[in-house]
Image 1 (cartoon, rainbow, N blue to C red):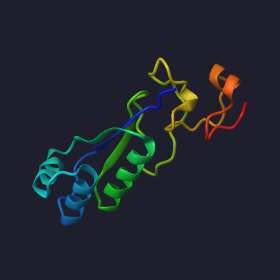
Image 2 (spheres, helix red, strand yellow; image 1 turned 90 degrees about the vertical axis):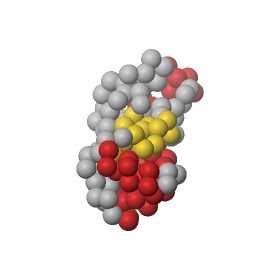
Image 3 (cartoon, rainbow, N blue to C red; image 1 turned 135 degrees about the vertical axis):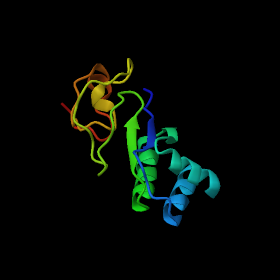
Image 4 (cartoon, one colour; image 1 turned 45 degrees about the vertical axis):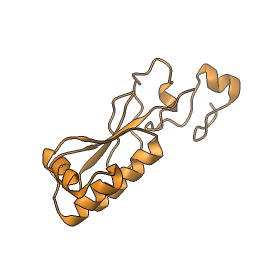
Length: 127
């Protein structure tokens, strides 16, 4: 089963101080000059198609530097809260991924065919 990917975006205007520039550079690998351009743009995808853990860590690095960052699931198009807690259960846009399996989700159990046959995925409690 394929895992959903996540995107880290700028969530609005951010300060353009040294800490913010270095945080964008750390997360994206861009030069300081390009990092400044990205911050000036205000709304841009900084990191795309990465696992949940990578996206959460990148958002933490940015937020510690004062940069407004949002993590969104590429499948269900939901944005995670700033504190990194899971979103409320809701429909997932994926045809192949059960909503309960999305790492952005707050569900703790699943009754899908996969879990019934192979057991719950890590992080899920058996139904």
